[in-house]
Length: 347
Image 1 (tube, rainbow, N blue to C red):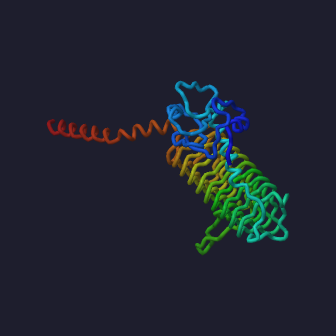
Image 2 (cartoon, rainbow, N blue to C red):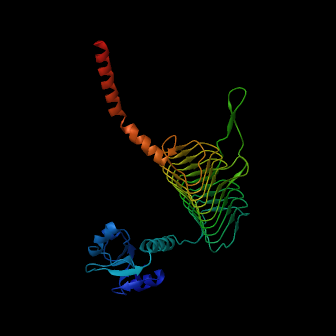
Image 3 (cartoon, rainbow, N blue to C red):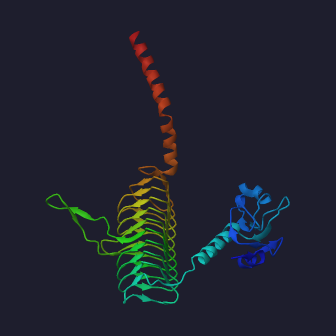
């Protein structure tokens, strides 16, 4: 689909510098720009590419001062990065604008759609009994939705998502391929004969509005009550959230984070890749957890920790500095010991 500079500027509330009739049909990086491409510039490190790019249109900040002639048509906006993000979202919505229920899907007779004409259900998807699905929702091929699941408006479930019975998905959520919502929590107790006895997991998972769950991430159902992913949280690929956990509003977790059961992680936290949390912990709002950290105790709000076991970030860096000096210290100690022995042998 082709768009002119004038149309894009109107969409973004920007102004055109150059040819208003310049046409683009694709998005591109400014350093890899080509004819018919739309790029953006917001990082000063890439400023020089503006004067070299072959992109037809480039979105820039209003505050940017052009120092040399530019071949591309420019669109000046308040926030170039944010504006380009809006265009990416628009592009994706257009690309995946599918509708209708495939004859090769299975929809239980007791499943309910808010608007059956405004939904997409792909091939071999299974929608079980008493499922409720909101308008504008897209369910790609081979998705499984168990009994009594509730799904809100404008949800995207990519191919292969599995949602177990009784779970709740809010509005505007995105679940990527292979994610599993509502599998049993890891609950076992040793029996008298030494065998592990399963504790039945009879709760569910509640995912609130505007949450995104990455590919092959798993959110376990609670033993009782609900595991909760609160509004706006973003969980990356291959993360594991245990039973009865609560992940706060707008908290972001990078890939391979593992959260043991009954943890409460606050709002606006950032968790680096491969970090791990012991069970039953409380992490305060706005905390920052470094990659591969091992959190084994509660953290107050605004904490910054790294390491395993995790330490305050500043303390950890001081400790790491000393750790890096250990070989030199060991050499000096050995030298001192040698001199002491020589001194004692002469007495």
